[in-house]
Image (cartoon, rainbow, N blue to C red; front, top):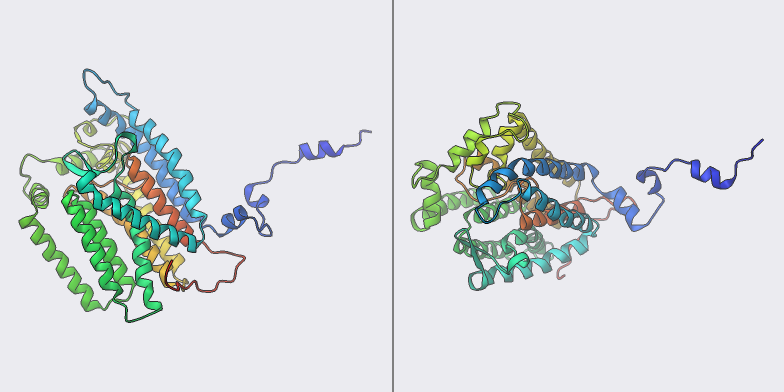
Length: 403
């Protein structure tokens, strides 16, 4: 009779899953992160990323053909391969930021907001022009779009300022946030970037709603927004051009109509991956109009599923905030999810012809380096702020002023 040895017992034991190896009694940083992380929210983000890879693979041939020339013949999957490279940077960054404690996430957001705000101020002086807009700063592979990275950190910084009222209720924190937001919007309109201006204004409005501003003032802000659009239409050439093109179809701009025709070309189930033809007529099939490409090749049902995933992310964050006692965390999560879901709503509305074209990507689905990394930062901060530590006392986290 053969007596089993200790080594044979060890080798024959199946590997335990990660959840069992990281037991609740394990107090290591990785174990704490694993158990307190909202894995449902993380799963929703990963679903969008997976859909995005399929969508970029479908849209890449159209953009590669449009940008190819006699001297340069781009691979049909050129943008798909580049997206894989950007994901290799964005995903680890999102996971690292999700491990930050709330205090550290707040400090990161405030410091990074100051840094990218200064870069935004320098764009009119040092920025370079791309496709008729001066939004980028830097050279070659080292160039970046400060407004993209400013968005997630803007939400953290404005939530921090609004939370000062916990220490002194007389501080004019709402006026401070209004002034900062107004300056950012002016800088964005100088680039020009109407879409980002609208998004920053929407994030600020969401913060005002959650921070307890009276309804009369909110209605006043809404009326002011309508007045601002009318003023921009009459005195801001970019707004005039975009709105006229959207309403009247002037200046030969028919992108919205092309997007809608492409979106509905595949019916409910689509024509099949790689079989779309109308996508080749779109100007930015891999970025601004990727939602239409999805509609043509994968169908309107796929588009509806994507919209449901974005709504599920919004609902999940709201549910996590229902029992939250800390004002900073509530406001910061409000700003971050308003940015993420607001940007998705704007992009889908443009593809449906509801909004004029704004040059804004669909979060985690459109191609883009700066956009993808900035969105990974945004989602990493959401995951960090929605964590629930099972080991520590759930005492409300109070911002006591300063950093």
